[in-house]
Length: 186
Image (cartoon, rainbow, N blue to C red; front, side, top):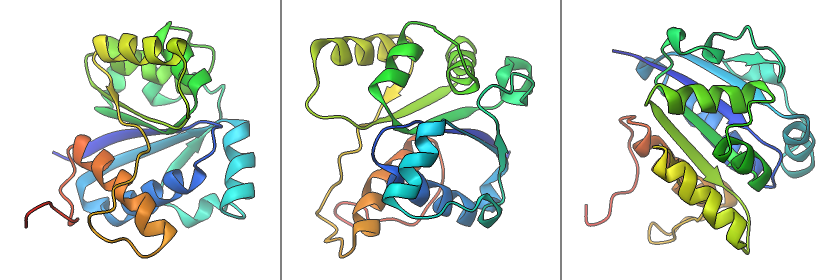
């Protein structure tokens, strides 16, 4: 069965992680039926500052406005099985942890949690304060997965994109995708 995925892009630094994720998902099109994307206004600003111009027509995904509560994944009946928030700001984490569904991104996360489906938050902040840690604990206890944007280096990445891919490949593994990536000991 092909996957139905929601990608949320929040406004923290780390737009390269979102770009690499979208690029890799586009290359895995045989494994998904639908990918819906929702991005905050700050996410677009950060993308353009950190990565360059954003052209949504480069991607085979539907982009939803942040207040489009008619998007299919705003309801559990649409049966989206996974949501990835990449990068996930601490403000977005806090709203998800406390059940504040004030936009499509946080509503979709709330739906995924209430339906007991897979929510993966690629958090991007350092250092962490106790509020951040407690919010991560709350989301974890609710069934979400916290996957900090912490790259690995044992694959000897050569470019910044390859470094970001060490995180994104881990996220795609957690989401259940079959992908060719560096595997320890193989």
